[in-house]
Amino acid sequence: MLWYIAIILGIVQGLGEFLPISSSAHLIITRWLFDWDPVINQAGGNIDVALDVALHAGTLLAVLIYFFRDWVHLFANGLSTGIKTREGKMFWYLVAATIPGGIAGLVLETAIEHFVRSQILVIAAGLAVMGIVLYYVDKKAAQIVSFEKITFKQAILIGVSQALALIPGVSRSGITMTTGRLLGFSREAAAKFSFLLATPIIAGAALKHTPDILHNIANPLFLAGTVTSAIVGLISIGFLLKYLQRHNFAIFAVYRLVIAALIVVVYAVRGA
Image 1 (cartoon, helix red, strand yellow):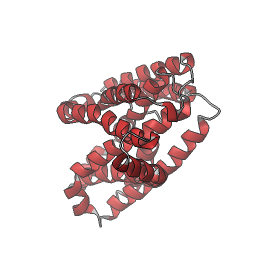
Image 2 (spheres, one colour):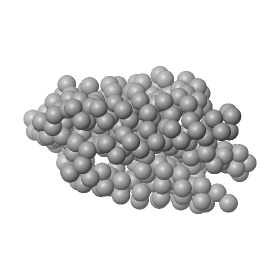
Image 3 (cartoon, one colour):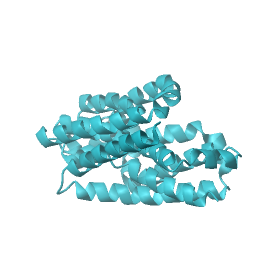
């Protein structure tokens, strides 16, 4: 009965995690628009938690598979040569940049989970405001910093900005790519650094739910959500990196504004 929900949410997660449109906001919006919460809760068996973990496990697989060679080289150089090589430096830059977002998540995630995530208009506002910011920054910023030229200071600034992604609608990839563009990164460099930075954050979230993963590993719904989000996530990463070679972020900014407007209209029509 919940197969279609697991697959649709897997598609939403795979797209939203890597495109600058906010996966958390879209998961909440999708469930709200179709009133799926009662259906999921009625199924019992901790299915809600299983689905959430499955979706994030899938996107973790996607980013690990896509950037497997990059991570092998980053790990090898980071642990063997330290900061003596460019890849060694990048490994430790990513480690350091992960810390601010990780601390913010530990301190604020529960409070935000209980308040902001239930406020659909706050989510709409986050989508709209971040869309405007993304468009303006991308239009005005120079493209003078390639991926290989990223500095430690720039990596830390992007890591700090990642804390804002705790607010649904802001988007982890959206805020990190926007910050990268603000610092003069090329669009490709901003996207690639954002994707690599996502790996430890998503891995940390999955690690926190290891018991749930082990408990649900044979659950068909868990597998459906994981496989779907992994496949769609792989497609999303490849698409965005290729798309940004010739295009800007305008389409994603416009999309965010359209979705925000749709939420407000549906909210007004429903009267709640």
